[in-house]
Image (cartoon, rainbow, N blue to C red; front, side, top):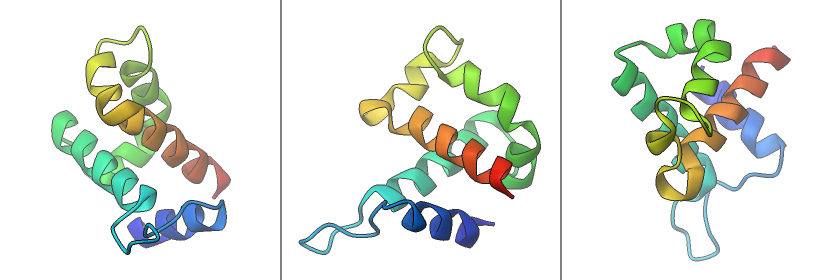
Length: 89
């Protein structure tokens, strides 16, 4: 599933690496999704099944907004892209 999400992101113009060769947005989003799974105590498959209910919890006004706002909102943005990926399948 991670590979599919990576392919989805790259297909939408997100980059794997910066010009200097460092990990870029795609890797940040994968890390953020993994962190959410850890925080929630769930697997990636469970996140896929519950993504619609989890996204609002990490968005503005949700109980986990502080976590969603980490790294300039990388976490919530990653969750939203993952939701789009899941719904596109």
